[in-house]
Image (cartoon, rainbow, N blue to C red; front, side, top):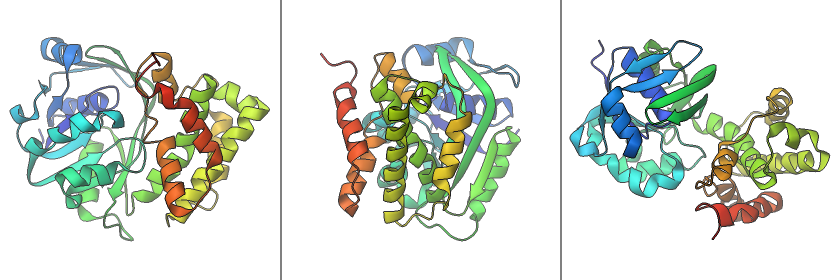
Length: 312
């Protein structure tokens, strides 16, 4: 058993998966959940179906973080549109040295979390995993990726910090593919250059990756959106790879044709969509830096009526 205490705020498809891995490895894990999902975890446990092996664990579960108390590490994995109600849940989980690792989409989460918990506590990074909440208390993993690339955001250096390296070792004990980095802004933006345009184009077109990439006008739109987002990254001073667009194109070439962005999945399910933290953030940052983003602005405008769910 490990004496490192974890809490997961947002124990859905992503956060719940990592909570299950940690609990299965013997860590003390508590999850913050709600509704039927919370009741299922309390009554039957948290289930994961995976080709890596199925798991059933019984973490502490609560809708109220005050019932959990201070922990050593918080994984913050709620949808960005839930920040208004989820960010206040972090305060009761904080002890003197608690770290908060945000796994949210986009590039603004670390700053948002830092306002609430203090910038010195925050680590961040993208996660690469394909999971879905199939039913309350049940998460299904497709594929085998379970990768978190994370590091310092507010004080990046030339080498991963000691606390990032130590946490990566703990996560690896739970069979999580943890990759510590010196400056988390770089992998965050490299994923953002792909994700924000991909979500916007697949959402606006209501089509999966294969249709978008094989339809010349849609492909041209997506490539223009990639280029706009890269230009914003460079204007921000982020040292993304010089061949980042080639990498993104190569990824699109091998992406399964039926792949849908989470934004498209939510859109087609009649749920709220993560537009503000993706395309909306590209447009805002571009405007502040004097970088034109006409394609991303048009896509964001097209999807705006669906931010809160289907228009009425």
